[in-house]
Every structure is written in structure tokens, then in C-alpha cells.
Length: 381
Ligand code: NAD
Image (cartoon, rainbow, N blue to C red):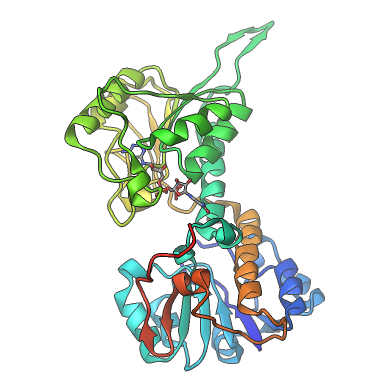
């Protein structure tokens, strides 16, 4: 069978779902590999590198989609791309099934089997295919780099002949995968880092990375997300008030605020209000990683960088992994390759779409002309 990676069509998307290295690994599973000409260019992988790795380079998207038994992609396919799916073809890509009913129905009607990468169950066995985590890790790292790029000072404190430099104070709101990556990057650059999350169990992880966990002056324990499979739930109004009061206290002190707070299938909670921005020092920076879901900061403009009247820079970019396209493509294509390894137990270049397998079942959203989303909960924790 042939696996093909088209050039991404979403504006500004620089990643690619197959790299020359991942193609070599896929060939070891017995597959032939193809890309659309120029598919890897924006990520730094020229066509010639693919050719050297034994990958066929096809001239157009139409030729690539037609020739491929399995299409691997990064972004949710556009309506035009979805139309290209054919009977029996497999698509492995981010697909946003919860908000892409039309795309799912079109794929089903055309008889394509779709594996949605964001649906890979977050269980230990599937970590190697967890593209949400690999991309969030990059976003967290890049958020700190972006903050540094917009901040006119060092992160680390210094005593130099030219004067004493105080260390930057960084607050990370939301200590999931992206937040922890941001904490690790900020502390490694020498910042004094604080972090907050509604899930109290992350306090230990935060502290083990050299940051201070921010506890609330609130009589109940911080909301316990355990009941929602490790994800956060909506906080009570009292909890939210206590959280906002703490942030108000911290706002004038913080040089950099990186917000990553998300609640599955909802708009991002608004946690950094206008008065908090107004209380920050000129030159401070906010990086809102929740911008795509509406933003954690009231003033965030998705996809834009703005500077407020009091001189606070607010970055609402929604494409952080794409801004590190070479790294992101390498990790994402490895996630895809691991998925294909599980789909090819015989290493015979033929897909075995085993719906008895928890991970494959969990990620499959259309199969043999049926919609299989949402999946049943995984059996293994
Ligand atoms: P996410 O992107 O959905 O949310 C980011 C963070 O925001 C979370 O830590 C969440 O608790 C926090 N948050 C939500 N509301 C908030 C608020 N009001 N204030 C402050 N913080 C708030 O989360 P994620 O990074 O995808 O990770 C979610 C969970 O999944 C974590 O427990 C993570 O450890 C777990 N996980 C497990 C695996 C695995 O394979 N076992 C892999 C990845 C993630």
C-alpha cells in the first residue's frame, strides 16, 4: 500500500506529516511512500531529501490523494480536501471530530476510514502516538521563547559591572502538558517561575521543575479534576473568585504571564481580566496559548500581537507548533509512524484496522461507512 502526505493547505501551516526519516521507518513496515511536491519545504525538508529516502514526489495534490491508500496530514482537512477522500482510503490527521460533523459525514458517505489524531486515548500505551501532547510540548516551549523575544530584559538575574539585573518573574496559568513545558523552559532560562492549576495533583510536578505552585486562600481544596479523567472541570463561582483575587495580587509583580488553561469541549476560561492587564508593569508580556479557544486573557486577539496603552504586549498566536515546523514535523510524523506501526502488525505494508484495539478504536471516527465517534471509554487506564 502507498502512504502519501500532501502539502498542507491551511494558510500559514508549515508542518508536514511525513519527514524523510519517518518515510524510511514507514518503508520498513512494507509501505511505499509519496509526498506532494514541496510538502516539506516550509519545514526545511526539500523534495530531494525525500527522493534520497526513496519517497516518490508527485506533482499535484490531486495526484497525491488519488495515488495514496493512506493519506497522512497535519491539519483538519478542508472541505475541498475532504471531497478527495475515496472508498476504502484511510486518512490519519487531526480532524476536530467534535466540531466537524459535516466533514465526518462526508468521509463516512465516501467510504473513507478516518483516524483523528486528537482522539488517541491518553493512556500510557498510546503516549508515543499522542500528538496533542507532542504539539503542546512545543507550544509551551515556544511560548517562553516568544515571551523572551518581546521582553526587553534577561530572564535570569545578574550582577554585572554595569549594574544589578533582577530575575524575571514568570507566572504560568494551567500546568498541563504545555504549561509544564513552559515552566521547564522558563526556569532553565533562570526566571523565578510560579504556576497555578485547578488540579491540585500537579503541585508536586510544578515544584519538581523548580517553580512555585500558587495556592489559593480558599477553604475548600482546589477543584479536583480527577473525576473528569485528568482534565479540568468548570470551577465553582467561589473558587473562581478566589482564583481571580490571587491573580489580582500577583499581576503587578509578574513580568511574563503564560496562560494555557483549557477545559475540554468548551471556550477557554477567562482568567486574566482587563484590570489585571492594567495593573501590570509596562514592558510585561502575556502569551495566551488558549487564544484559539477564545483566550484566557480578556484582551487577547487571536492570531495577533497587540500592545496595550500601559505597554503590556499580548500575544495571541494560534500556530506555535507551526512556528517550530521542523521540530513539530519530526515529532508529529513520529506519532503518525507509531500509529501506523500498530496498524501494521505483520509489517507487510497492509493496514489492519483492528477495531478491537482500544487505541485504534478510540481514534477512529469513521469506519466502513459508519460514524464511530464518540468512541466508548478505553478499557485500560
Ligand atoms: P488541557 O490542554 O486540556 O488544559 C491545560 C491545563 O489547564 C490543565 O492542566 C487544566 O487543569 C488547566 N486548567 C483548566 N481550567 C483552569 C483554570 N480555571 N485555572 C487554571 N488552570 C486551569 O490539558 P492537557 O495539557 O492536555 O492535559 C490534561 C491532562 O491529561 C493532564 O492531567 C495530563 O497530565 C494528562 N495527560 C495524560 C497523558 C497520558 O498519556 N497518560 C498524556 C497527556 C496528558
